Image 1 (cartoon, one colour):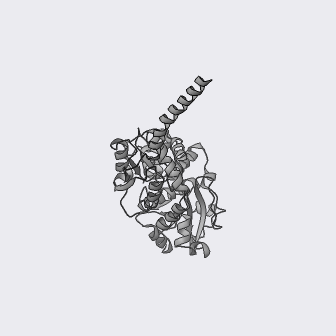
Image 2 (cartoon, helix red, strand yellow):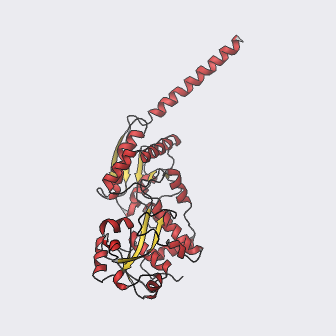
Image 3 (tube, helix red, strand yellow):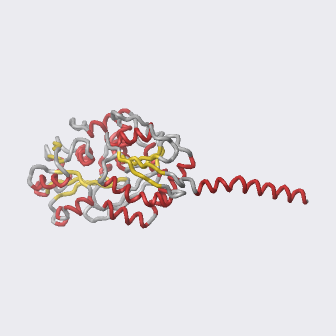
Length: 352
């Protein structure tokens, strides 16, 4: 009996001696370290402000409260920064990136300059993911239902540049809704599109509902524009404002799986938000600590307040596992990719 008690005591001592240092290392994993966060953008924009809101909370929730410094690395719509993180950064958990959603779109669409594999990057989530877009026309045109909208040839749809988010939205709405020979006119800023519509230079546009309500509430209150359909990201998202809650979701007009694939690609490109990423080969323990810090940051009420204060928008966090799954589920067959490139480009819309 005494021998058994001695054996149990020795086993317990060894277990404690073995795990105690590991636990100590875990709670101080980043102590005394400096972390470099590479941003694929210029300083001062919305993306940089979103990161600024998160930094103090990430430092707070990472074990050891390390120093976090930012390095801006603009170029190639995020390709330069992502290439650096994926190929040049040491995979020790001390270098990470934050890049716009072009990170995923550029890779899936085979854009030039992509030197990273999106299936090997380590995803940590994003503070922004949900979105909505509405399609509207000038009320003076009298296109107050879809039949009238479809019957009018040559509707001039305004946008910033070919490939811009609003441009692709306008093209998607026009294609899926079945507009007759729409024309796409670029070269405007967002507010300038609205002014051009008021002056009769443009007939229609895609826009973000929140932007409409914040910048041009008269479009809704005085019915200066007719709103025809909405894209929701994710698809089952809800839009609370009564001006938009009865609009049909664009996918309800899709005729086949081919068109639904394109909408899925577009939604996912936008849903992934601005991903935080670690290099391939980062140790599992570092990944665990980073993902936990992200989860805690996204749940922190003070972070949500600071995010709103700095970016003038509500945070819509996407957690790491959901982000990783969304990227894996993007349609990647060659036909879908070729079709999406046509829709995002400057050529005529494809036939349906």
